[in-house]
Amino acid sequence: MITPMTKLTMLIYHRDYNKFLNDLRDHGVVHVHTKKQTLQDENMKAKMSEVKHVNNVMKMLDVYRQQTTDNGQQTLTTELRNEELISFIDNKFAEIENIQQEIISLQKDDNVYAQWGKFPEERLNQIRANNWDVRFFTVPSKKYDNAWEEEFNAFLVNEVSGFSYFTTFTSKDKEVNIDAETFHFPAMTKSEIENKIEELKSELNDIKAYLTDIAEEAINRLNEYKQSVIDDANFYKVSEAAQRLADDKIMALEGWVPTEIETATIEWLNNEDIYFEASEPEKNVDNPPIKLKNRFFARLFEMIGNMYSIPTYWELDMTPFFAPFFVLFFGFCMGDLGYGALICLVTLGLIISKKLQPMQNVLWLGFFLGLGTVVMGTISGTFFGVPLLDVDIPIVNRLKTIMFKPDGLYSAFYVSLIIGVFQILFGMCLKIINLTKMHGFGAALSTVGWVILLLGGIVTFLLDGIGIPFYACMIIGAIFIFLLNGPINSIAAPFKNIGSGLWDTYNMATGLLGDVLSYIRLFALGLSGSILGLVFNDLAMNMSPDIPVVGTIVMLLILIFGHAMNIALSALSAFVHPMRLTFVEFYKNSGFVGGAKEYEPFRKN
Image (tube, rainbow, N blue to C red; front, side, top):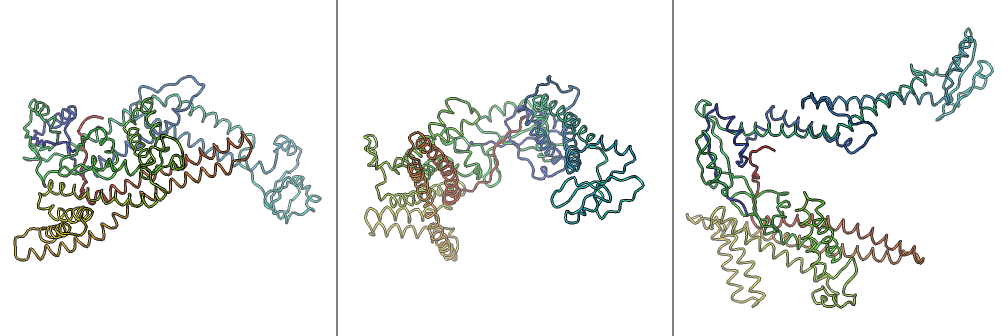
């Protein structure tokens, strides 16, 4: 159900405009349509960029908030303003990045020394102090010449990846002429590098410990700052939504308020120094925001409908009409009594425990989807992959009359098609109401003809076969489809209507068949889930070793893993494919338009 809206047209003197907007935001019930171009101007882009920046900083800080340190608790400097706080945190993360890069660079230099094994710096310095020239070389191993060992006191130190690393010890006045590449070491010695790495790691740990200590406080302050930026952005959007009149002296602002609170809003506006008018929205002129108001069961499915689109103000809210079908489709696709019972127990347990309080609607939705699975799983006759028709238990025996029989493969196939035909015809009936509501009954006559032809034809055929009632439905339906599908106000009008009817017939004949066949996916998904459950049961029984305890453990592991995977895959398919049937087949045949904006009153976050 769509909540009725009242249109408010407000005229404000330009000097009082900002004050009024602040009062309007504090009142917090009036929705104002903003201009698209406002979202693209530089001021708005800067605010949204700042919000994104703050979110990124908070996300990085959240990693540190989840950690603990042994240091004393450090706090933020209270003198830091919000903008300065962001810059301060950014600098800390930049310091971390720079230190990490420097450590990586030093570790690369340290790896250079690693190729030479344990590097005796002090011993080499002593050798050099005694007028010996120590040089380091590298050469491909196949070019290494053993004669260098006699001529230049060469010592092979290491061989890595086809290269030989060696050093020579000669007097300082002797020329060393070797066909090898002189090895150049980093400017820092190995000990200096190791000391520097330890120093940087200590500095890095101090910064991380500090961020861990301040993370909670910083995130809270940044979240408040983000909300203030969002409030400023919303204020700016609304302030730019007004039309400027009388040389910018008068600001004309249009707003919307639910009719149920219209009286209280008008009383408030009477105390403001403005001129205003309250009126009903005009069809084909106004585009009121949408506030859905459904009962508990249907309200749970609003989140699903909103994934596609929000209905316009002038049409039906399809949520209460597709909700029962969605439960039925989900249960058909899952198709296992055990899976449905498990879903019900888990969701109901979480609801009662109230551990996931913000997700209560999602949990209740899962509970009802589980109930649908219990019902359809009972009809399909499977319990965790076990065919219930083969089970001899009194309570199960009583239910066998409603279960699909051994030839249930065909029964499920036909049931899925029958459900599809029923939902499509139900959608066409809703389309008649929808078109009448939006454009008048005349716009729905063609759809009336199709309902008479299809629904009447099916009913009369089932009751009496092809007889006079059947032909009457065909003739009456054809009159509506080919003659009354448009205005008859000229000589050429009937010919136009007949041409339009032929085109409509072609689209209906081709589209309707495809729509009905789409419902076979209900049968296919339910069958695949049942087969997978049965396969995992067979694997558990046949692959378990004949060792008393070990065999039981292996069997349970296979059953738990297999059925958990099957539940996850089946639940994903059972949620996605009913959405497809709802948004494509049902919405199309019910004449759903959508595309409206949700009611979002101007107020502080």
